[in-house]
Amino acid sequence: MENLLHQFSEMVYDSCQIDKGLFDTYNVKRGLRNSDGSGVVAGLTKVGDVVGYEKIDDKLKPIDGQLFYRGIEVSDLVHGAQKSGIHGFDETCFLLLTGHLPTAEQMSKFSEYLSSLRDLPQFFSKNMILSLRGQDVMNMLARSVLSLYVEDEKAEDYSLPNLLDQSLNLIAKFPVITSYAYFGMRHTYQRKSLVIRHPQLELSTAENFLYMLKGHDYTKLEADVLDLCLVLHAEHGGGNNSTFTTRVVSSSQTDTYSAIAAAIGSLKGRLHGGANLQVLEMMKNIKKNVKDWGSEKEISEYLMKILKGKAFDGNGKIYGIGHAIYTISDPRAILLKEKARSLAEEKGRLDEFLLYEQIEHLAPKVFFEYKGGGKTVCANVDFYSGFVYDMIKIPKELFTPIFAVSRIAGWCAHRLEEMTFSSRRIIRPGYKNVFPKQSFIPIEER
Image 1 (cartoon, one colour):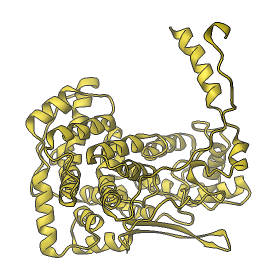
Image 2 (cartoon, rainbow, N blue to C red):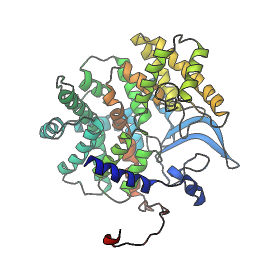
Image 3 (cartoon, rainbow, N blue to C red):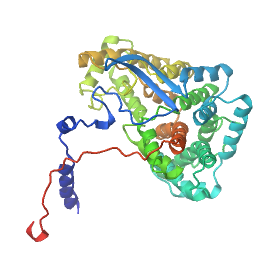
């Protein structure tokens, strides 16, 4: 059977290869990207906006990065919540879903309602999460979302109030499902204790997640930083892969649970949600091989080795540096770095933070030297997020699921928009077939 599969695999491989030159011949936008690297405009949205360059005379001009949630710059949203001394994720969810900042009364009622939705039915936790365990939390999360369809008597009700209620239910339950899935996975495959803590009504989303994960063994700064991460990952425009997946699937007018499960599958992909894990592994390698963390020369030389594929994993990538849209700066990285330093000081890991800071400063220069100019690159949010999670002692298996816990807010906002705006159409781009024509040959003559 193995030889047969190998033989068939070779046939499949040959049939899947497409000459790269044909994309230019037929003017096909590979990966829905223009020749200058910018994304093909495939839709309109009022939810989020990602800005990293200006287009002047058909040329891209790098500018400082900006991220807008419903027209509000994310830095204003973050600093506003911090100034008020509150966790901002619930406020961010309200803004993304409704388009408006909540009043104090609305915020109180909204947070109270989310808290009331967090608990999972006991039989659901036992049967769907703890009994049907898996080795990957993202897969367990997707399966649980699809299972919630069965529990929803209005799963096929596409009225706006019901779609909104389904969205709020998923936003509230994602942290709980993720926590339970992790403990079920580690109990089965790592032979560690099975710990189930019930969410607490009075705690914020970030506090609840840390409580379910670690009990009361977390600091205020840890909760503040995790809340910041949730806010920064909640939305990133309609063109990122998982959000676009949400919109593509939703445009067919399917149910909420199918659309969100599809988005989870997209985010799980190695090229989308797992970059901070790669950064963490790369930094371990750099810390091991760079003797003097204060030497710009030694750091730069090692980064050049990485780019040339002669160090770390051989892929020629400095993980966490560069982004599809951001050029000079990623506003999320700037905001996270502000808190990462404080957390590093609290944890006695300031020397590591300073190494990260050095690499953030040097990597674009090394990249420019290696490429001989061209693309402007900067540190993206993944460069610091893995380091932050590691300092909070969040297990690596939860890095990408935390991304989902946050991004579910943006997914739901985009789904609501896709399902309700009056000019909607099913998303169906064209594909040019380039397989040569062939004649059918009867089986006895083949």
